[in-house]
Image (cartoon, rainbow, N blue to C red; front, top):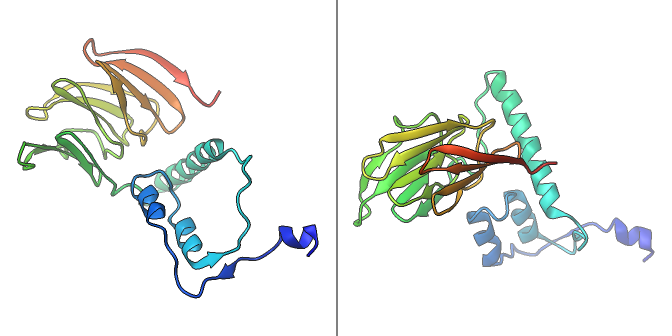
Length: 201
């Protein structure tokens, strides 16, 4: 077979579906974002592989930015858009996010309070738990600091775009990246923004 024929070799369908459990776990935890790719790998073999020099991080950032632009354009025209991860589940300590809402749980995992009436929009990223507060970011371009005790809002802060990435924290500092790639560093104790950084530059 010549090199040109090898380059265009087509995938061969498997006799029966084949699945590695690790493919599923990466989908479930959000490490992989394309469900179709896992389906394709399970049903086909001997297909062209991604070269080892492929920059997956840059591709993922560009792909996510493209999807968010398309979603925003469709929503601006009055359409309802449902995307991957909007029904995602994340549990951190005694706070969980499910389907865009945040739930605070007691030691017996019973609900103490939830966010539908307490924040500006759906929460599609995992929150950050500080000493006695919870930091959540929403699709309405807002960050909310809530009391872990009763869900009461203690502070809110506007960011430039929707937030879909999980929130990171260190001590009382909180790090949030919006869908435009702007990183916001906040001091939850003093309730101020410390700095911003454009990760796309």
